[in-house]
Amino acid sequence: MIKTLTLTRPDDWHLHVRDGAALSTVVPHSAAQFGRAIIMPNLRPPVTTTAQALAYKARILAAVPHGAAFEPLMTLYLTDRLPPDEIARAREAGIVAVKLYPAGATTNSDAGVTELRKTYPTLEAMQRLGVPLLVHGEVTAPEIDLFDREAVFIDTQLIPLRRDFPELKIVFEHITTREAAHYVAEADRFTAATLTAHHLLYNRNAIFTGGIRPHYYCLPVLKRESHRQALLAAAVSGNPRFFLGTDSAPHPVHLKEHASGCAGCYTAFSAMELYAQAFDGMDALDKLEAFASFFGADFYGLPRNTGTLTLKRETWTVPEHFAFGEAELKPLGAGETLGWRVI
Ligand code: NCD
Ligand code: ZN
Ligand code: ZN
Image (cartoon, rainbow, N blue to C red; front, side, top):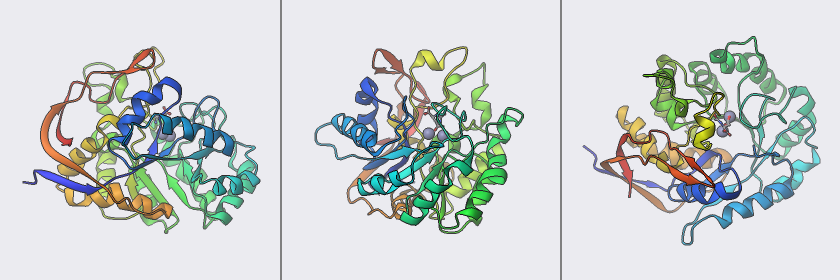
């Protein structure tokens, strides 16, 4: 039985770190494990200009502990009116991608896209300049069942989008269904997907076991077991277009444990431990390094990291909470034990 596992330093290709006082809690957690992370732009107000993204990057860097090397990779938030010429400016400034939130789909998505057609001039510029589009892939129409929103998005939005922009790099973020895993597996080299640790480890029963458990509520919502199995199969398949993106999404405890609780699981503190648990469960620890440390960098056209990260087989208990500005932050699986630990 493998006792330790040393990987090339991994990257997180989908991360929320928020802003202000929250940064000093969550940025050190990610920096302890990952070399780089794609920073989501869904702040209030959203990050829609290159200047805002660079200022946000500086605030994140200020929260990186001394001696840690962690590079935030910045993104812009796509709106109906993001000007096409902002794309060249962004690329010049080292911004790596643009994020599509369908309006109303998730946390801080009110300023998101109401109709994809409206963004076509901007997507045209992105395709031309090789800037990837990162997609929260869910339709928002209230008549569509919550559990079907990702599958319907593929048919009604993604397939036409791909037809109209055959060479636009698209990352289908935090996929949760067999349909999405199948779509990406069948797609060409311009389409990839990120997989979260929580969608690999839990099915929707987790939200309802012994009472309603808001810390397991995220979007897209956890699905039934057969979907989880399809995601696990994709993660360990060795297909380079499936890679790690935690979607660690911190919210204060009092807004998670609320009559209308926020969507998002905080996983950054034990991210690699959670992924190791999932891969170990599939007897596929040998597939973890490429998934966590190679495939994302290759898709984005960035160099792979040079340092390493070591995990040890060891039982430990996830802490109950962290300070989070004036509030508290509860990590996913608080108080539960994990079988791997970063050393
Ligand atoms: C994310 C957040 O809180 O910003 N929440 C979530 O449930 N995943 C937004 C997102 O990634 O959709
Ligand atoms: Zn999302
Ligand atoms: Zn997210």
